[in-house]
Length: 302
Image 1 (cartoon, one colour):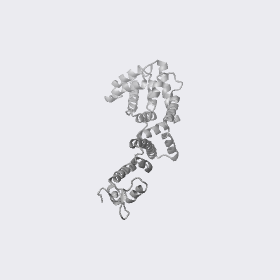
Image 2 (cartoon, one colour):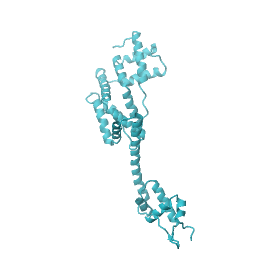
Image 3 (spheres, helix red, strand yellow):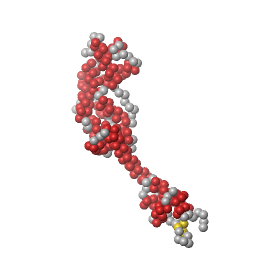
Image 4 (cartoon, helix red, strand yellow):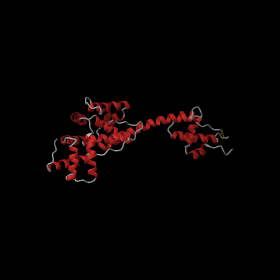
């Protein structure tokens, strides 16, 4: 007999499949014998070996047997089948990432069943549903406040979860969504927006006070300037020439709230941005410098 013909046992050894599996495929026409021995045993040609290797590959990639038979019989083009399977696989990957993120968050937090149910619901929201949820939060924050710059601020505060997010992005979205629905956090962000708007009404258009504070204090902080020193007093004098001390303290108190900072940390993860710098060191330094300036007799009112 031609050496290119194989018994089921030989095919099993060459492919790693079991004899039972090869017989199953043979009975269903996926691979057919080229002939039989005088005793009735099946014999397969080299084409059967190639078909079985393709079947094995396609099965490992998750294709069902009916689709595989169409491919090996050339009834379906492999690239089209692969594209359809890839699309289905991408959906499965997104679902698995979602589940991984929810289970990871639940494990870390020690969540109750109710909290886990909420996290799962938030993770499953569609793009439109996510936009509506965040849109409601931002509308509550800025509605009715007379400052045209709020439209740009709202856009910069909007999370955009990718179509194929990483597990960390899904987890960040779930936490941010929970935070944005928290009534206390909404009240905090509303106060911050109201302070921002009132500052413009009282003084007129000017630079964002928080950015001004950060840029004034950060160089002194990085240089190791003692907040109790006369040099720090110069920073305080420069800031109080542009902002009321009470406003400075109010801004710092609100802007350095851990929940606000957490929102922007999560936003950066979701949107793939660099992690934002914490304002806590700036706030602590300026608070000390303001107290030191007042104790030296410096005026903290205008």
